[in-house]
Image 1 (spheres, rainbow, N blue to C red):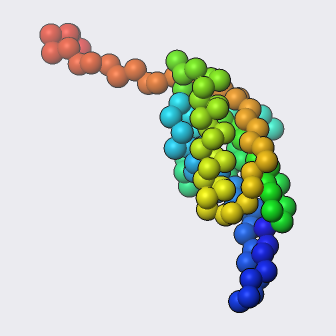
Image 2: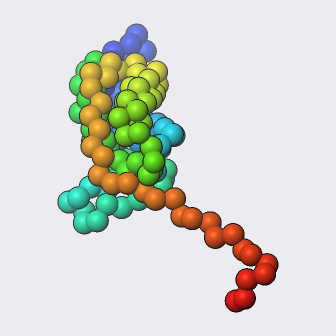
Image 3: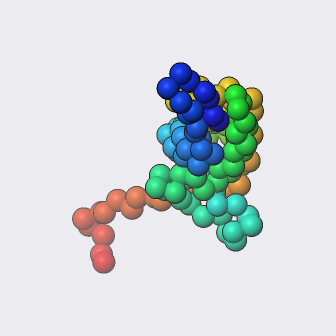
Length: 126
């Protein structure tokens, strides 16, 4: 995005939009992680510092289109989580950049299982 103001030109890079979208995605309940994509081998779980992974954007002068590849938490209603994800990403990008987000496409590439915490039984023989 670039915008001419009276003070000069304002440009927002694709990487900035990708980072905003990735962080908003990771904050969405039911999203376990972003996926590096099938082309990178097995779906990798990535943390916030790699928030651009699993995010593809096309940014024009006034609009943006966003593609997300995600891993959802087991037990979540995928349709509901993905709708919330689309809303969260759209809101974050539009509020921070002023771009109009025309589409947020979501591809669910995996399901994450919570690691079961094994309760320690004091009477159990080890």
